[in-house]
Length: 105
Image 1: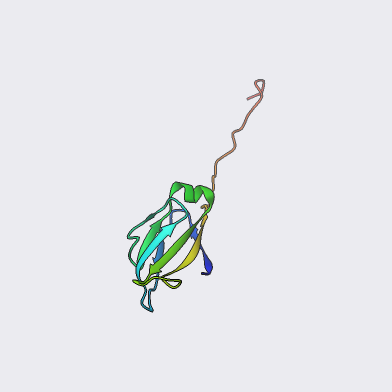
Image 2: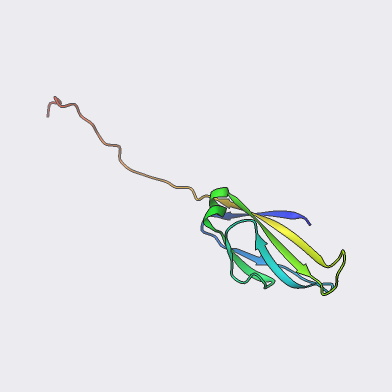
């Protein structure tokens, strides 16, 4: 298993694509976070980050496939770390002018 990293801006949805071959079937997506998969048993799905994912700054996504057999090769998985980047904010305003009470008009 090798973990890759992908960066998402705040508000983005992760489109995920997995590949199952070599007699493996029953794909399943799981997460260390609290986000939601559009279809967790499809090789291709979308992941919407949850509130805690964004607060923590990341979530690990796991893609697992199983065979109908048993033994050491009955399951395989891979993972992806999603890192969430908070969108920058910009504020523009005029600073208030404070004049002394005895300012001559």
